[in-house]
Image (tube, rainbow, N blue to C red; front, top):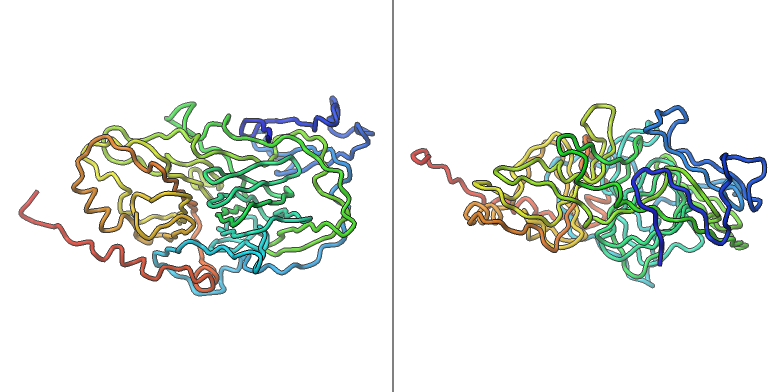
Length: 437
């Protein structure tokens, strides 16, 4: 059974129980560390950031991470940040569930199974995002990945992930998410055919949204975020352990003779973490009309413009609908933000047909979208009683202030684009009657 510590952004301290007292007392970098360990700091912010935003952790390890051979280029496959490889497409886009390769004919682990769907900006300028799909059927063996460009918010949709990090282990199952922050080395073990979504941000870290008039409690509560406890292995790998760096959108590999998971103890506030989406405390309209979907924000990565997100992670969880005299499903909308939606399980209320678990949709900046014709007709005639909404369902949205470009893999190579998506709105008909108020 894996153990965790709770709290978002907390100052945590952990040491493997096999080495009690491994954390130095009273200082970060003693002349000689306990057990003959090396001290190494991992910084997730500039040294001079204000205390409230300063992120760093101290790791006490058997060998420092600098002990590796030079990095060499590694084939990226379908991972990219070239947003100009194909012409822009402003249409409403929807994808059928992304196909998972079959093993053993086509073994694919988490790294080789990364496919970039859309994005904007670029990592060298430290401003941008990317949406990736991962499909895999085998575990990472004697290799790890770290992202020099930004943070990964990982949303498993099918199959659980056992993620080993320098800070310890996390088990992440569908309906949970995890965040692996910039620079943290990790490996992913899977247990069969596995699929999910990744929101990558470069230039900001995820944080909890401000609550404003909501008050001190609600939405995702800090105590429900879980951080792994220290775990180490002192393992030599004479045949070579591969460390993969995602750097400026490219992959590079370096060899070393030992496991990178040799951290005996650590302390700090810069950690990987996970969160179960069922813990989200929903806020909702209880009189009439809609509150905006921003009330469903779990995590946000801010820009320097107040209230404008580089990226928001938003969910649409099970809840009660009670609004009077209101069209209750999502309204028709044109938005100055870009909206990518995915479905972990169930049926999304505004489009029960066509939008499937493991698939996705993209409604680009100012592209109109909303309920399909069947949903509109049913909701317009429904008797408005208190009702459960989205039971057995979990849909989510990656929303960004950037205008997202879709990759060639997303539009062509994946062969999962639903070219009939636009037809779901064709049956909408005029109900206009100038003689009826």
